[in-house]
Image 1 (cartoon, rainbow, N blue to C red):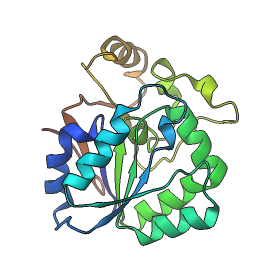
Image 2: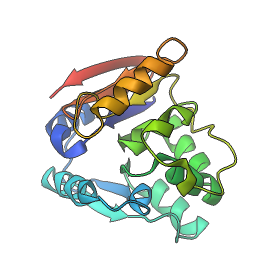
Image 3: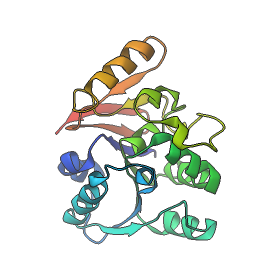
Length: 205
């Protein structure tokens, strides 16, 4: 059964994740992918997310996919209990997911029932296509990305940082531009999208 926890800022909704996972988290392992943050200068959320996971009792197993071998990536994704993809540049993230084949491996794991946690870029990348993120992220940071087609694990488009500084106006412009054609799910930093197979809910912290 497909199970996803999609957030803007994981550290702010971590207690909600505990209820969503609905199992004892102590000692469980999570593949932590910080790759989206590499081209960015502001990356405090990476450590904040890691700390929030550890405070829940989880063991964080970091996997930086741009430098890892296919064997390392496959091994960690299969072995660990959860998958966590941090925020950063959505286009760079997708470029590296595709270049390394991690996109297919993650999709396979999600379809097999492994719980996926996305934060910001990590949430947007599971949508069908990330072109809508252009106002938020610089797509030129992913020069090798040939297509904006993303993981297509869900049929909607998560839109993080709704009403939150410094993305408030950017998110409003994305909504104005894409709302008629895309099924956008705007979420603030204190909300998360909970996906249980076909059941999709937006919940407040």
